[in-house]
Image 1 (tube, protein in one colour):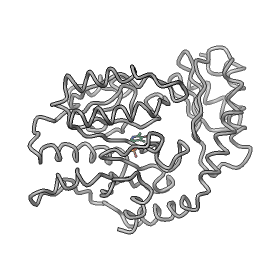
Image 2 (cartoon, protein in one colour):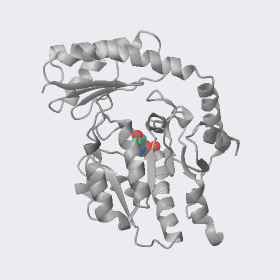
Image 3 (tube, protein in one colour):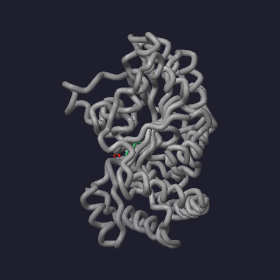
Length: 340
Ligand SMILES: *Cc1c(COP(=O)(O)O)cnc(C)c1O
């Protein structure tokens, strides 16, 4: 109860009810079920599908996997039993570019065409994480929220990676100044110490589900596990000191400085930094085996995947260490450690 109240105090306006679960993937499945039950409770029984952009990552349980990017989310491998969802284009307008309203065209078209089937739109706000480490324009989210209202469907933000300051705002939704109907958080909720996640919703969703004595049909055995909640409380104490702003700001500055030399190196497609996230996107997939071995030799631990070498240092990273990580990336590219 105390943790739920504190959590809501940090959340965008309008989010008022909390459901705790054991992991991020489960929190996403809970969000999908909330949306389905809400639609069912108001008689919209045909709304059984979810719409989501390509390039997303939402977890590894069946429901969460069904809304991951169909290629990197390994839909081929599990095609036989994954629910079929609707996919739209990745938000194409980058975080630092002038906003291009045409980046919403595909979302508008999909909602106009399939709106009556859609229980909710689900996406990671501003930063798509494990699906491609892509940073897109917050204005896209404002436009999408309006399209969802027009289509009378719900909006779900998966803030499991972005929540608790990672992008430089407490929640990435703040970049757009909007509040979704449902929001998932996890990961940094306990500072990464114990597994705990939360799915938070607004009054409309909660009261819709609970109308006529209904209850939300999900009951995790370890829901709001006392030990995990105590850890989350301690982590929120640290966050509420406000030091995270300085810490994330310092890491951001060092990532910008440290990764800048990579911009002009051969094979590099794009270098981007937002909050405590730094990404070097290559034109070709990197050889993760040789690259990782190189990093270990340099005394740093990074985990590149596909075309991406990325850094998400902990907020407590000591001064100098972020630059050291960046220097290792630069040196790897200089020596060609990423080539097979
Ligand atoms: C990590 C992650 C998940 C899954 O969380 P788990 O705790 O690993 O199940 C879901 N969505 C996003 C955006 C994530 O980064």
